[in-house]
Length: 291
Image 1 (cartoon, rainbow, N blue to C red):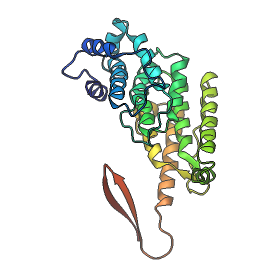
Image 2: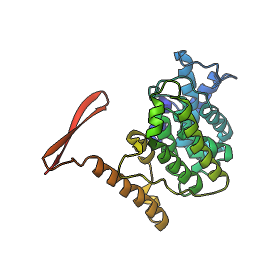
Image 3: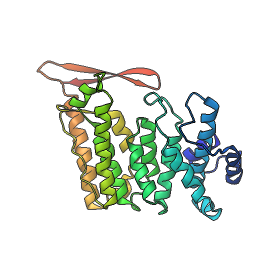
Image 4: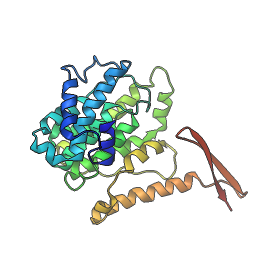
């Protein structure tokens, strides 16, 4: 809980100092941490792993200079990368709120923002964007918030990859509901997108931002994932640059067009569309009227 609060508030939470937190989790570390041996059903072991990677990220976020002065950058880096590389543990879609990869995404982004990220860190951040846990994807973009002026190639490839994953083709949707093909085709699609952006990263290419169609014909737009991808963009730092501003306006215009088209009733009669949503366990409706 100390690590979670420190990460969220961006400052050292009361109750422990940075040094006390590091010393505490060092006593918890084992040689096989974040390996395949750590099964999700072992609740206490997961709590231990969450504490370790949480502290590794928290000290970077709360006081990077303190972490550097105490020669803990390498220690944090190794933990964060190991957690980010954990194999799929079988967690249900978006059900594991404290996945160690969440803290890994936040911490690795801080290393990028402080210009101490090597190619392994940069590549791993792109890989995390393909994770099935949406909160992991969100954590990556929150971690990169201060990194856009430091590593443009990584950040724009991260955004391009994230938006590309929101454009789910109808063909893939059919495979998704077919027992024999439901996972293979989607995995192949994700791998192809990831490899394209890894190549961009390795060759310093700034990608074109994927176009978002105004009508969902051949694609299904993943609104939930898009929110996770876009919510942490540092607009005030991006729009002063004319090229970046054009890219941001492209995304904004296309999202607006898609939203308007999707919510425009058809026909001459007065219509209303009721959208049932689920937010924090509460169902609510919103009405869109056409006069």
